[in-house]
Length: 290
Image (cartoon, rainbow, N blue to C red; front, side, top):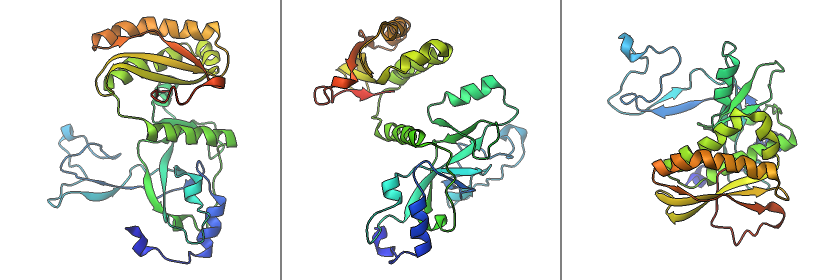
């Protein structure tokens, strides 16, 4: 265990820095190192030649297997994904010397609005306010996180771009990702993807509907999570159910029923719950989707 290497007391510079940082804060130019086996490449760093050109890949294969690389291009910023209570431990002898950050990038200036929209629709991409004050779109890429020692924060000031409410939303997004159960790909393709597509196709109509939606859940009525045979969607609203909400999901259901049938899933009628009197025990079997 890492306990054997813990140093106590921690330097006062580190302890003071930890008092300033929270989950959702940014740090500039974080180290971004990852391990890969270049004999079986999955991702090609920027500037490396395509394998079809005949040029040599800078990631030369090593008989010894995996090696360490720096992410290229290096992220301009990293966003802290570690929970604030784990980052700033309130105990006499801290036990967690490490924290995690995800890379933050400025979307390419040459990307058109449609391309930027496609990037922002990805489930692991989070739009954030600009850390430089420019008018460009900045995003946090949650597909990868890097582990840093908390000593990296000594002498740094947090770059705060998220409001308190935005930090709460960011924490909830991270929580949903980590708590997400293993589900069949068909559930993602038929339910999550089609809901997201319908929302993006008519944002002006969808926005007021989802302002009333607390969360969207899934009930597996026959089969299991990896091979569901019959499912239904449960929409939990922030208050009393309204007609625009039922109409929106009824239209989605009509679009989704046939694709679901094509992959062997029977999609039952959508049902609704009111978050103001939601029975957690009675509904603990539900799977959070959105």
